[in-house]
Length: 347
Image (tube, rainbow, N blue to C red; front, side, top):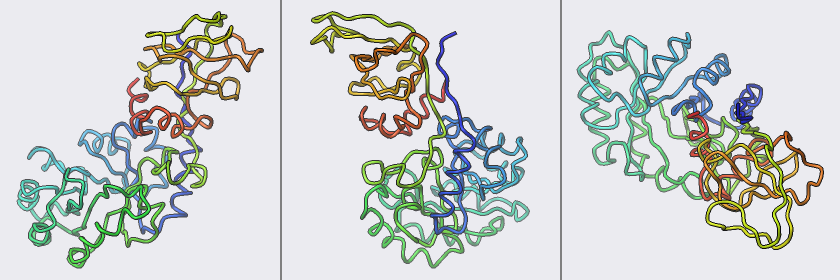
């Protein structure tokens, strides 16, 4: 069996929740667990945060069903709303809260009987041009949802396009100012808005990436300065060591050639495991950072062991975790931590 391991630290996840809760001004916080809890596994995260999270936020109805099957009795928000009339019928039976992102969803929810008794989060587009009601149509939708027989409370929901920038909130918040008066709840803040921008009046923040130990704005605010810890560690072992002579190359494309005789190691991890196919990366061998050489292969990486003369086959190699952090690996690869987490979580 290949010695690749993805380990998950429940203590780190709980620590991150408490750290976020202490820093956030929002009254309540949804733990966002879409995409298999950002690759960490829905059951693991749900069980770990069972007694901590105020609620959970998902995209797929299957995840809502799975949470209820785990006996999670907290509020569950369907962040993109129902995708069909069949899913609308499940809102009441699963006791879900739902987003409404378009007029069709508004019509579906408005047709539910009073016995459904649900909370609806009307999503307004404030610059993403992805999902959400246009600002100039939002008043009409909010009025219709508020008057719908099945709706207990109406919330205003939005998603910031650039909350990871210091001045990223003011313009979108200004666009929402009048609409805020029509609702009883607000759900605006993602991880970046919640942790980096102070009080925006949220009743229900939606925190995802920060829960898992990654900074929502790594070029602005380092993970450590937020007090977050790695939940996922991707580690493997050295499976081969050899001497590469001056002038010889390693890997596909011969992108790295030895300027001097170099001791290199091969570790069992590659882009097939979610590790980025990029150059300029580092891994930690026995706790010391060393460069990855040449191109990453599907199941292998080649490592410079020049400064580790005692490294041996079987020694531990950390691809990301405490050191290097997921943010450092993602930045070096020109990627984002979300992408690496979810890719690694498919295995």
